[in-house]
Length: 109
Image 1 (tube, rainbow, N blue to C red):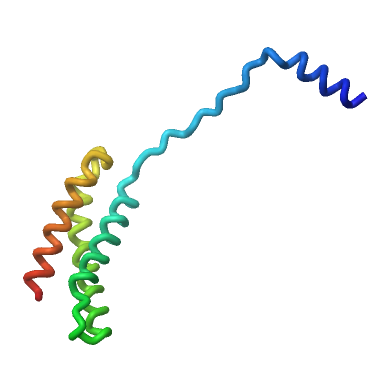
Image 2 (image 1 turned 60 degrees about the vertical axis):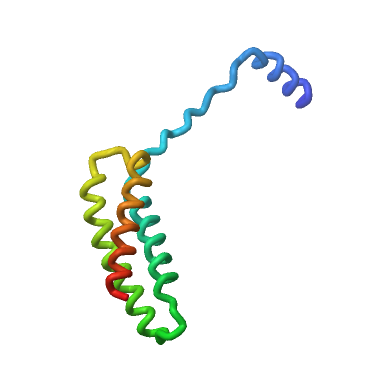
């Protein structure tokens, strides 16, 4: 009997179209982009400053201070980006930011 029921169900519902599931449109928020920029700059600074002559502790302190400075720079950039489309502006502002940070690192060393 159960086989018959299944068969009947598919016969009856054969012509119905399956419902479309609407995918949510993902809005790009600025905060993850800022986190990405911060991570990139921290890594870049770490690579620049990892010379074998420095002690580990002083390296870490310098990297931390640079990360804090980069955070400040990112907050400045964030004020510029706030009301605009982040996808378009991400790359241009990342270039601007990284150039600022590299200048700071070069001046310090």
